[in-house]
Image 1 (spheres, rainbow, N blue to C red):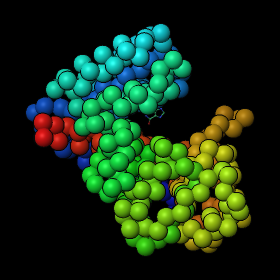
Image 2 (cartoon, rainbow, N blue to C red):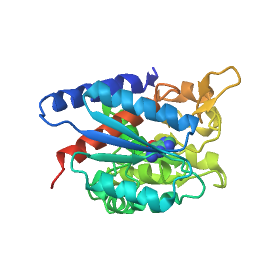
Image 3 (tube, rainbow, N blue to C red):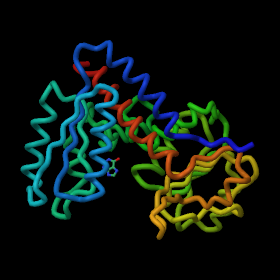
Length: 278
Ligand code: GUN
């Protein structure tokens, strides 16, 4: 029997818990999303974040700026948000226009409000095994595995992908959780040799249906972070459905990792709120 790692069910359970916690608070967690320009995909992400905040009783605001805003002016806007004690979490939605250096903007977010976990202090703390904000997708994956009681201790986890947002932080997070981790990527020689060793295979390489049945061993747990649109408008991941039959569990696309990402962002915002003033 293959278990489907249902991210909708797991995220609902987490949101329910958050909602219960927030109900007992007089003040409410407040997330601010900074949106520069009019990127269509970003508009969709931001709408989803606002909707989810509402569901759990958080306050949320979107600060919109014209695509022509200068980096200096954006720094000043961030200063205001950093210093506003009624704001607990800040996200600068990526991508930013080309004339703005995204890393310099991220570096300017107060680390204790950096609920995306992108600030170098949070990244560094994660790699030191210290408490920090962990970016939403890796944290969501960990929570999805926890929800289905999939133990990672001493397991061989193979990560396909080395991005700063998913591959690198999920590897660090799982190392901290006592898994044995191999990181591979699109230029890894004989990728199949590595992926076949995986007890847990996390695929975040951004190549549509790369991982077929030949890439996995029987009983593997597959977590698919990829998202691609088919010609007929349906969605699919980095994993080909032929690999599912060999697995003991897999996260589908859609309704797998995606909903967990938002739940993790809400968890980070709640954490920022609870640790405010500390
Ligand atoms: N753009 C796409 N995904 C993300 C995300 O997780 N955080 C931010 N800030 N921007 C994004």
